[in-house]
Length: 526
Image (cartoon, rainbow, N blue to C red; front, side):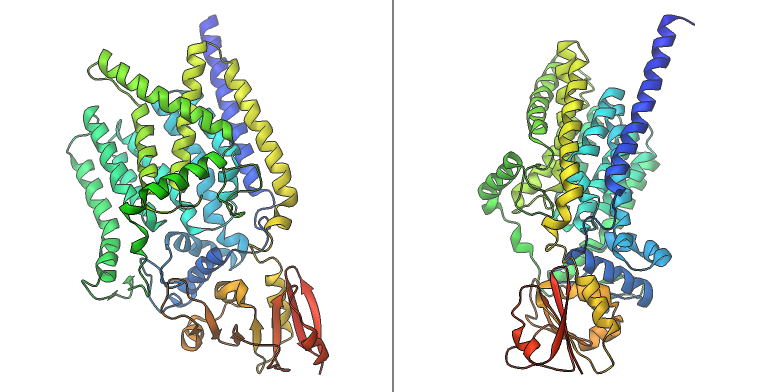
């Protein structure tokens, strides 16, 4: 065997080994302590989980709509895709926190592989492995994959749409799959609705320039598929703008929200929004512990430096290649397109990290491109290993702190202890007991842990700010969230209160207390 063949086989074996190691690393940091880290549950994932459970068991959501294209939820709506993806897992394993987090975990792991495929296809194996590795170890994507915020599904489906579009330029049948993925992304996060048409348009312009797209049965089918998938949401906009009435067809519903937050999108806010996204990127935090942990940031500041270099090389190389070659391939423009779409979105709305999630992967991919170009100029692969080592060390420091301390630091945000408090209350209640629950936990957690039948919830719920964008509840079923222990004590009731609440009046009235995380349960001694 020639030395050249041996080198090729050796490189192939190394690439294959690195692929396996990176995927294994990415999976490990996402599944270790999965379901219990974060401990507890966030109010949004609780609502998404309850809606999925209700649709599975009763065929309707918490407002009585059968399979809506958009949930009313808090009053101003919630995305549906996460809940629909939860349904088969709830059917198999029941309703629990780890179960409803499975779709996010699975899609996050798949996203790692899609980043590899895209960068390998556009550039080379080295770029693919780097992209997968960096995404595997950055805090933002690790944290995103471990809980079920429905809007955090958007990056996975946007990446899937991009990945299959890239494959479609070689084999047009994949354009259909790309259309399906982009169509699904619309149900992952409503804020990206202006973003998706923009990136699809720019991708098509690029494919036309490259002569990689033609009008045939595949492209026509792709447009039809995307239109059909977007149609329910177009109807949703018409309903909520008052042009048509609600649609209820049994197998699908298009509801009218109690409050439409369309006013959040405004061209007048662009200067302020630009400043906001720049601050988030430079400071690497939005101040929300659910999105960013301590000083570890979104994806480490080294990513910003490499991304700035990548942006420079994209512009420089694009101009150079177009000048030198009439039909230049300029694959780096596809990365810029993804960034432009995400950046455009951050200018339209005031964002935090999860609202700006569509820009995060493009920034990482551009950083990888920048690193590869710098390495090429230096004509040495040593820099790649040095940078990879830096990412690994930074990620190891993050992982050590995250796995050890995050539950203590983020416990209140996820209402740690409330599940146990609800279970204790259930075991000690009777048919006549009212369970008084601190409103700080929000109704969604009570709905999730109690598994209250949806008809019982609909028929008994009393909202405290109806109609509104973010509605709370005074009561539903046996649960009451509007009460005053200082002036009106129910000795037949059970109280679940925030830890630290002054409960001296309950103790004086003969109540016994138990502590569960951030909550105190008080039951009367009869």
